[in-house]
Length: 157
Image 1 (tube, one colour):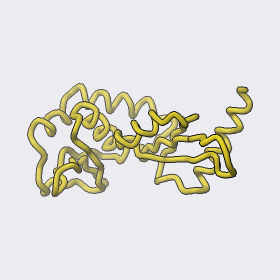
Image 2 (tube, one colour):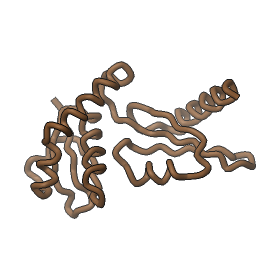
Image 3 (cartoon, helix red, strand yellow):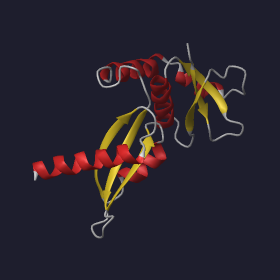
């Protein structure tokens, strides 16, 4: 069984926080820790990094609380139909510059990348968003997602 680790990436070397059994559960845990420990950044890594340097006890204990584990389990259950393999979740953002041939732009960020997602969500040119499960979306996938988004947008209008 492949394990994945949550690591604290704002420290050097990156500090081990916790290990889980799936990429998505690790990602949820990293996002929940990022929300509850502002100023700290968390990432994920394949493999259980039990031998590496450890983060502080407060963060490691916070990752193992019943409330955090329950929230992660609830989120996995809510996504079970869309993401049965518990693959990574990407947020795709569509922006409209309002002019020119290349007026639409797209950005994709991992679920646990809270600072990047916050910047995109506060952008006044943001016109929509979508979710992608799996490896990082390539340009073809992003283009298809944008086309689908624009078609749905025209149908509503």
